[in-house]
Length: 181
Image (cartoon, rainbow, N blue to C red):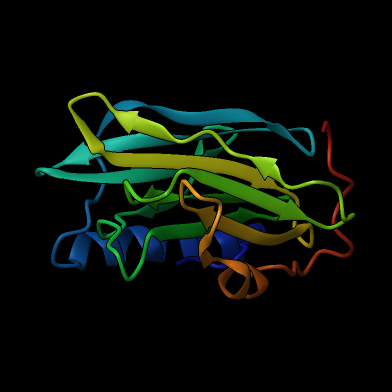
């Protein structure tokens, strides 16, 4: 998992992340084949997207802000013990949350600051392998509170609050206001 990055330190951290992925046992290094966009949007005035990428038989997600790669994650398949497996990658004004959910997950909710109702996130299945289900969303730093995976009966399978809490600060002052709903 990469932390929220800023300025030239962010570029260095992104390079280190890519280098680590290249040196790892199974994580891909660029170039990689883009299969499809998992999700895309504009938040805090920044265009972002998360792509499903493929290299060497492994499926991964690549997070981009303004076409710059800010994170590359090869999540392990979700299991009964871990029905939600996600990465958090960032930019000074934006945090991208992306990953996999197990077939047991019926719905995925994003909770943010402001106590508004949780937002149901879309879950996308890979057409060639519906067991691989992906999601992605963006939020400004300091706004993400929880990511909740629920089963078909509405029971909470897993919360991502602890992982999200680790990446909620930026070094460049207060976070910008969130655009849109």
